[in-house]
Structures are given as C-alpha cells and as structure tokens.
Amino acid sequence: MPELNRRHFLVTGLAAGAAATVPTGAAHADPGPAADPAAETAQSLASRGLRADPFTLGVASGDPDHRGFVLWTRLAQEPLAEDGLGGMPQRPFPVLWQIYADERCRRLVRSGVTVAAPQWGHSVHVEVDHLSAGREYWYRFRVGPYISPVGRALTAPHPRSYGGPLAMAFVSCAQYEHGYFTSYRRLAEEHPDVVLHLGDYTYEYTKNTYNSPGGNIRHHEGPETETLANYRQRHAQYKADPDLQAAHAAAPWLVVWDDHELDNNWADEVPEKPEVPQPGFLSRREAAFRAYYENMPLRRTSIPRGIDMQLYRRVRWGRTATFHMLDTRQYRDDQGCGDGYRDCPAAVDPTRSITGAEQEAWLLDGFRRSQAQWDIIGQQVFFAQRDNNAGPAKITSQDAWDGYVASRRRITQGWIDAEVRNPVVLTGDVHAHWASDLKLDYDDPTGPSVGSELVASSISTGGDGGDSDPAAHPFLQVNPHLKFYNNQRGYVLTKIDRDLLTADFKVVPQVREPGAEAHTKATFVIEDRVPGVKQTYLRPIDPTLRLRTEMTVEETVRLETERP
Image 1 (cartoon, rainbow, N blue to C red):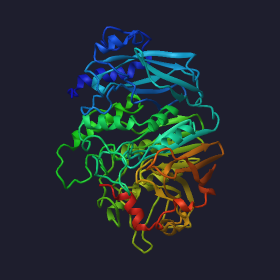
Image 2 (image 1 turned 90 degrees about the vertical axis):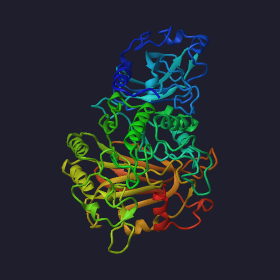
Image 3 (image 1 turned 120 degrees about the vertical axis):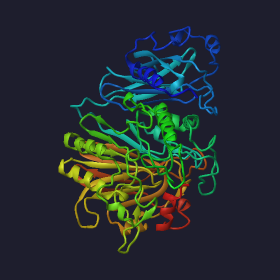
C-alpha cells in the first residue's frame, strides 16, 4: 500500500474538499490525457489500466443541509481484490458528477469534475451547495463510457421553515454472513427522506468465526480486518451487495460507527481484550477510520487525521428536527468491569464518561441552542436502564450507557435544564427492536418520563430470529419503563410531523433466504411535549414465525453479547 504520509493527506484532502466548486472540465491533479471524463473512450481508459465498469460499489449521498449534500462513489473494477485497491491502477482518474432536477436525468442542474485518487482508495466525495431548499434531486457519475447508477438525494428545508412531514428511517447491525440484506431493499422501497445508520455497518471477523443460529449463509472474504487493505476489501464486499446499494441510492444517509467497523467492544485506544498484547491496535484503528471515511458519504470535516476522526456532528432539518449524531466509542473510558452484564461499582463512578468531556459539552450546548421541534440523538448503544435482575442487585450491560451512569444522568439533566421540547434517542447495537420511556431516576418507576428511546433491530445480525409476545419478556417486567421488544430483523420507519412522531417497527420474517416482504410489527407514537412512547398497534403473533422458546434473560443477553 502507498505510504500514508502528511503530503498525501494534504493533496487528497484538498481534492475532496474542493470538488464542489470545480467547474466542468477542470481537475485537481494530473488525471491522464483527458481532463474531461466524458471525452474518454474505453480504449484510452484501458491504456491506463481501467478496462471494466468501475461503478461496482454504487453511489450514495449524505449529510444534507438546506443548500446541498455530499455525493459519494468509489471506483473499483474488481471490488474484492485482496490488496483492497479494487483492481484499480495506481493513478488518479477524473470523474464527472451530475445533478438533475428529474429522475430521468434530463434537466441538468449542476455538474463538475473531481478526481478519484489512489491514496484514498479511488473514492469520491463531492460537497454540493447552492441548491434549492426542501426538494428532491437525482445524481450520477461518469468516467468515459461508464455511467454509474442514479441516486436520489434531498435538501433540507430552509432553517426558518418546517417543510412537510419528515420520513426518517434508521438501521444498524448488518452482518453479511448471517443473512441477506433484504431490509435494506425494503427500506429503499419506502422512499424515505433521510436514513440514519447507527453503527456496525460492517463486521471485522473472518469466516467461520461469528456464526448465526443455523450457520452462516455466506462468508466474508479475507482474514479478520486489521490492515487498510483488509478494511477496504471488507467495505467493498458489503458495498457490492445490491440491496445495500439500493438503500444508499434511495436517500441521503447520516452515518456513525459503533464497534465492529474496527473491533468488537473497543473503547478509545483500548481493544476488546486489553489483556492480550496488541501493539498494532492503534495502526489498526487508523486503517479502520481511513477506510470508513473512504466508503461513506461524509463531509471534509470527517477526513481522518491519523488515529483521530471527527464523526460527531449536528444536522438540521429546518425547524422540524435537529439530529445530534454521537460517537460513543472514540472518546469513552474503557468498560469498568469488562464487557457483558455485571453489577459493577465503576458504572456509577462520576468521573467516567461514554462521550468524553468535549463531546458532552458540545451536546449540552446544542440542547441549549436548539429551536427545533424535535431533538433527535442518533447514537449506538442502549440508553435507558436495563436491569436483568428482579432482586436487589442491579445487573446491567457495561458496554451500554448503563456502564456510564453519570454520563447518562448529566446528558438527561442537560436536556431537562435546556427545556428541550421533544428529546428522542435513537439506538442500534442490540439486534432487537425496543421502545422505552426515559427517566432521570430509573430507581423511581413512578417518576416522570423525560424523553423517549426507539431502538432498531439488526438488518441481518443474529439470523432470522422469531416473533414473541413482547409483554412476556422478563426485561419489560423488571423495567417498567421498557415498553416493547421484538427479536426479528428489520428497521424503524418514522414520520415526523410538528405535533407527532410515529414510529413503525418493520420486520422481515426471514433473512436466510432472499426476497422476504416486510410488515409492521408494532407502531408507537410520541406526542409533542409529552415525553414517552405510546403503542397504537401490535400485530398478532404469527405462529409460523414464533420463537421455539420464549425469550429469557439468559437468551436475550446471549444474543446481544455472544459476539466473539
């Protein structure tokens, strides 16, 4: 692989940042004989090593505001190449990007040329602005005769406007080996305005390491991801999936990572198993961060700098919603008593943090400044308390906010003090649908609810799962603020109006076979200025999809934590 030195960072970072302002026909570096990608021929490209369609990984958009969004693609004529280079030669290629006002790509609005450079895995990040607020656009890329699929993107409403209802979906946890990405396909068919991915976009394991019930139905290429080549290859394997490509092309995404994009249950500079010497962990972190940026529709503010990457950020959707996207991995203190469920004294240590002091201050300041109808906190791990013991002991997940009780209380108190109108926490990680009321003091079940949490199941992690009666789940009996549980795969689709947030918990009956249809298992609403979730619909249990055994505490914990 090329040396990742400071000069490469400056040159390619500048190219990524300046792309939106470059006029058609210009380029940032010497891309070859033709500065205009549309003028290239298959023969001229082949003479420089590009002999096949390079748009095998699809297209994506992300981080919209009222003026524009980020456009992304990555050139790879052999996406699964072991060296992570996607079969691309070690030279830059000019790429034409085009934005249209119509789906059939007849009314051109903006266009320009950027460069796909080998130092950044031939990825392209174009920050487009000067578009109209609150409307749909369509985009594509071109290199010579090769034209990418068409993607759909939206700009946010003007900051002083509510716009119409916001259709927002959120997802997490897509283990390629455990099942087909059918939920991504069904999500694309919903035509959302924006999609939040809350982590575990890829998994790091080599094949036959992390197995789903019934066995894995497909396998990862390559070893466990540790090098830049490994991570690039793994991202390419996921991006080559047609269902994932459809979901990216359907709407702009807001992405944040959790743990498996690097290493299970990592914390800041500490790997999952710190007792095992891992002198190369920081190099692994640097490689994972770089590959994550290369493969995501992120703005230039997220260009990684060594082992650091700015991922927490704020995205506003007019006056309707403000999305506070958090990073609960890069700055957290290590889990106080190891991973898993424990009664851990360190969990209540007021000096420990899951966000780090700087991110916490940024979030609390955002609460104070917010004028949004809905403040939506997009983050990774379970926020509400989940005690799995009916007795006096408090046994909770140390990898979640339960392992950082003081952090949770300070942030909850922060939105109370700021009089945030409607705080809603969105969560992934636990491979099941949940809904809960949020409390300042979880030891007082009669105390007021002060917020709401919605948790998305996995796209595929854990295999098919099964249906059950949520009221019978022991966690809901021990924790009265927990209101819903379902162990099927799927996503959450929300409609956000000024006075009501409606959340449909979507599930697919199976992921071991492709093509399943999705249905709504339950619907919850959150009313304006009324903290907490209210169930308005619950689909009866399908006996053909019922779990063979009712969910127990032990089985729930195993499904969440048995990740080697």
